[in-house]
Amino acid sequence: MKRTTLTAIALAMVTGPAMADPDADALVVNGEIEMVTEASAPAHLEGALKTVYSGWRFRSDETQAVQMDDFDNPGMLGVEVALDAWTEVAGTEGESCASCHGSPEEMAGVSATYPKWDAAAGEVQTLTMQMNECRTERMGAEPYAYDKGDAINMTALLTSVSRGMPMSVAIDGPAAETWEMGKELYYTRFGQLELSCANCHEDNYGMMIRADHLSQGQINGFPTYRLKNTKLNGVHSRFKGCIRDTRAETFAPGSPELIALELYVASRSNGLSVEGPSVRN
Image 1: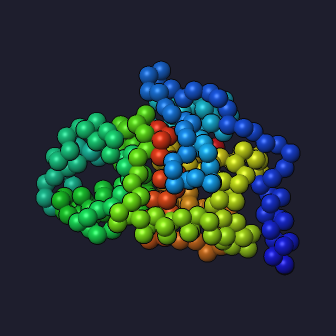
Image 2: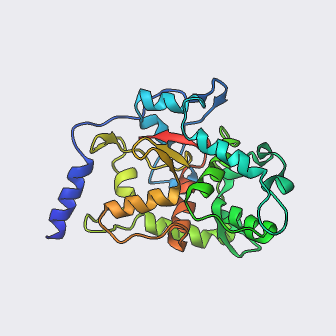
């Protein structure tokens, strides 16, 4: 099949007569945690976007309502599981997360800065990588499987105590090289459908894809409970699924490629509030 035909098919999948601007509803969780769901785009998005919107703004009223109350949000079940794991002694050193960090609330604001450059490791680390470093180096415990249940639950706990705080991911200094790699991946067309992240989430947000509206693909709400698969989802698994949907060979969760992509996409969310665990379709 010729390239032009494939491109036409791809565009037909994401465009059509139904388009929705992001709604103007306010996101307040539990009647007290106010979320910023619309912000001026960070300076490094000049020429690409003027305003960044949380994916919450593109969801139906019913889906939005589920996220607004922790008693309704099924993602909070993962947070409850992680609360037990937080104080559980694991590994050979007789330590738990609480041994070093106290209560989970002491970690407020931490998730808003990840991924970030780790000078000791000499690389950009995601929150999952940092958690696993603590487990292996300080607790003598086995690392969590990347983007699997235990890791996602613990990430959900750490994001939950940061809800309402602004995303503030640094992209300068030694992190810049990884950020540039992530940016290149964001604009690279993948697969038989020859689609990039930007084709959907920058060029066509608000348009319909199948039976849902495309968002800007912001990841300030991860981990995300998806009604589609009825579980908490990690951001690398979502990246993997998007690339797979272009009919391409994809990257593994925790791979250098997806770490770089996470850094770049997280930086696009700067100024929006941490929402995780959020609820999406």
